[in-house]
Image (cartoon, rainbow, N blue to C red):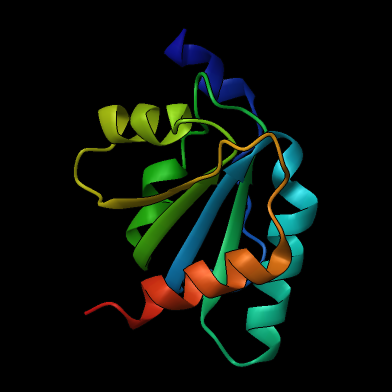
Length: 122
């Protein structure tokens, strides 16, 4: 199964290739994630987005991307299945998680608030 990763596109990043915070998302959350990240980028924050299209297997450059950011957050509209998968496969990184399980989508304002909270943590 892992050999399939040799045939899928490398993961891309929206924003700078390195920085203070990497937002990791997948599935139908792309629109709200990109809006929240762009809002913060416009305010001078060093934040980027990696929206995954392939999760099993993950693209070969995933660990390289993660290594270039000081903090990583994985917001999910579930109990955190993707962040658990990432923790299993990349134990060398610390992943913050932000879950919403109310049957409602994320709002840009709540994501910006959470991202700022993570950035301010020591």
